[in-house]
Length: 331
Figure 1 (cartoon, helix red, strand yellow):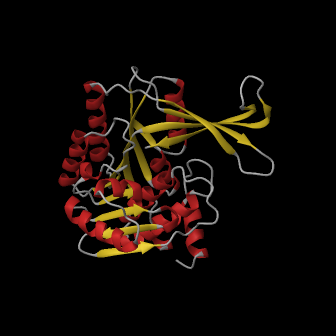
Figure 2: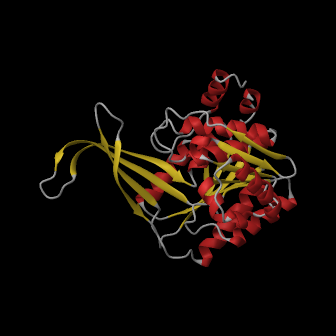
Figure 3: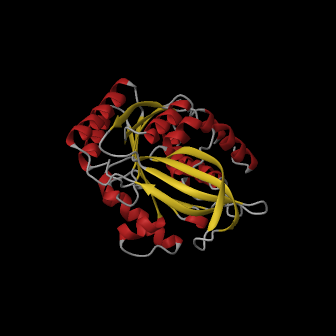
């Protein structure tokens, strides 16, 4: 599998996603406030990282892929910061559309640090624009998708759907048309909206999202396997991944059965934020690099186990993944 990881470099992937700026305000809790029963945090640092639909892109770039980002940001400092962070990682940001009528989606986490324990998140403040995207903005997003897919020699389009209003059926239909006209893989992290991505190469969701769509609980391996077999056919997808937390992930291949992969890391789970983004990025890129479905799922499973060891969104590098595979005897 290490050979697949090494061959990931240079492949071209376009990511369409609800992009966020994730911000962490870090400080030490010294005392309780006199004004309310809350800790007073002495400010130490502020960290900003790409989040939401920009996190799979960061993972692709860390794996050596040539990644391009499509999304919408505001004309604000947060949008400029997000653009700069992506560009600094080598991502093509020409597909980021500026909408001056809305803010860049920003999630600010207040984190208290301690000397003898892991930092603890105390609160999160989200900044959203709830109004629907204007037709002119949607048209610009679709034009960016067509341009990047056709002129950048893209090999895959990855949808990272955080259900924040960017990805609608016409945009997905545009991707299908592009794939029909050329050899493009279509993959999606669905956030449970599986029907929207009917006919794609690869779909990913977590167990709760799969249960909501399937309409029944998925407690056992047999129940998951039955759901995968039915959903692969119902949705006409070649490969469906269901992440199952501490129970690892399960993968179904249309006409090819199902496999359950045990979690590669259950003892050093620090923060599950963004782990699903790592899974879809690695699985998608592995398929582009020529891996079969089972190998792509195994690589994604190992990468997800690495991502949860760090606070916040984590981009797993090609070197980290190769070393983890070697240590696990999966070379």
